[in-house]
Image (tube, rainbow, N blue to C red; front, side, top):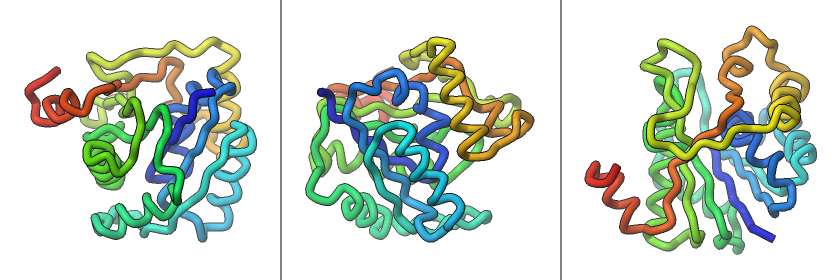
Length: 207
C-alpha cells in the first residue's frame, strides 16, 4: 500500500487541487495536514468530515490566516509542519502547493511550497516522490487550470462528481462560488523523483 502525505495551507486546498486523486486512489494510505484553522470550529469540523469522507488520517495547525495574508514566520511554519508530522516523516509520495501557488496570488501557498520542498531537499522529510499542485489562472483572468508541462490526470466522471459533492455539500460552496469554479476535472502536478532535478527546476535550469 502506497503511503502518501499531503501538506496544504488551508482546509479545502486538499480537495480543490488534489481531491480527485485522493478519491481515485482510495487504496493508498493518506495523511492530510492543513496548517491553519484548527481553532475555527466551522472550518475544522468541515475538514475533519472531509478526512472521514476520504478515509484519510490528518490534523490541523493554527498558523495565522487573516484576510491581509500576513506572511508566515518561516521558523514557525517549519515547526508547525514537523509538529504535525510527528515521528512519521517518511512516505512514498509527498504532495503540496506549487512554488507560485495555484492562482494569483496567495503568499501562504507559496510559503508552504518553499518550506516543504526545502525539507524534502534536505531529507528532513523522506519521500520517494514530491508532487507540486500545478495550476495557474492567467494573473486572475480565468479560474485555475493546469499549468503547461504538468502531468495531467483526467478524473473519471464519477470521481469528479464525488469531488464536487465534497466542495459543495461538505465545504458548503455554491456552484457560483470561485471554489466550485476552480474545481477541475483534470488534476495536474509537477512530479519530482530526484532532488537534483528539483534543484535545477527551481533555479530555472530544468523545464
